[in-house]
Image 1 (cartoon, rainbow, N blue to C red):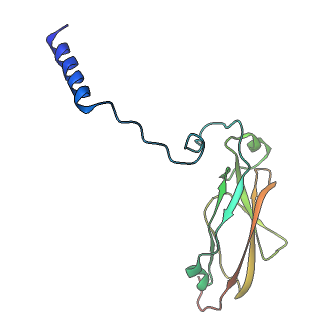
Image 2: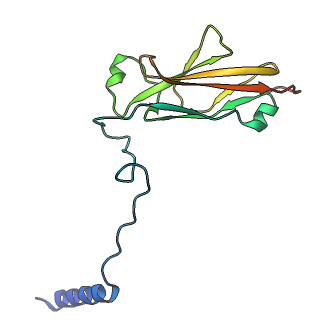
Image 3: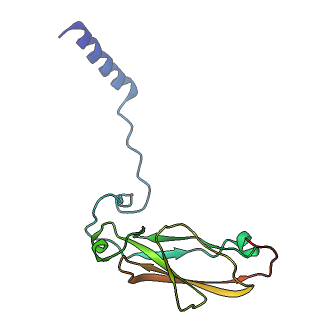
Length: 155
């Protein structure tokens, strides 16, 4: 063995002896059995049911007459993709439907961004949010009730 090879081997043995065994890998964060949620980049053979989480309106904005509702979907990615072919996408994708004050109409949103509703009159209101699959089938739903206070000024 050349002298450089012996020197490198000796240095490696001494370094290992001085430092001990290599440190163990850090424990993964809690979550799934392995500690990590499945990566949203590979097909999933089975998926837990999707669910919707909606926060109450942000109070500072509500006091100014602006309704800002933060939400998130669990076990479903919010994206603007629609139609029956998108049912085969894995991990699961979908969007939300929104109705304000029991209106006869709703809108769909695939942005995943907070809902911002303005120009509601002072008083009680409710916003229904439905978590939908790409064919608009509702998978979960939440209703948020709130009161817009009397305020001055516009947004």
